[in-house]
Amino acid sequence: MPAYEQVIYAVKKAIVSGQMSTGDRFPSVRSLSQELRINPNTAHKAVSALVDEKLLEVVSGVGTVVSGEHRPSKDELRELLGQDVEKVVVEAKRLSLDLKDVQQAVEQHWNRLTKE
Image (tube, rainbow, N blue to C red; front, side, top):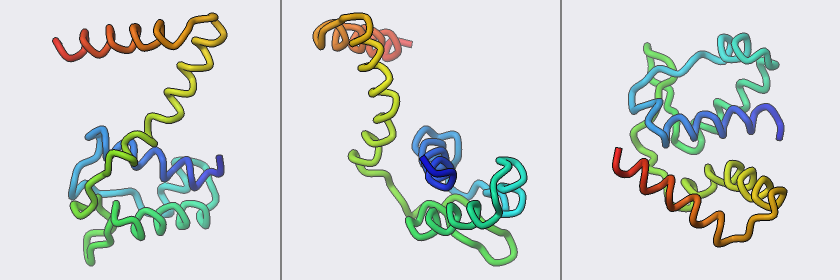
């Protein structure tokens, strides 16, 4: 996955998971490129894409902040799980587990975390 797509995915995940909230400041392109050790053009491309998707907005005199306009859809939320689900499926197949075993394991963890 290209670096800018990784940045976009990480930001979406942070927003959806609540690690970043509406109004939180987002690093400048320069600091983002330095922190992540990526080309400034790559950082700019990622930030521009996030602004286009209305996940970030540029506020005059403040900088770039997390927008309150975007509400993630069920499809976007499911997409964020995609990579993790694929890892679970690959590992389950490696262990020769069937779908029912995986569903049961997910349900057990779901119920445990719901009670906490």
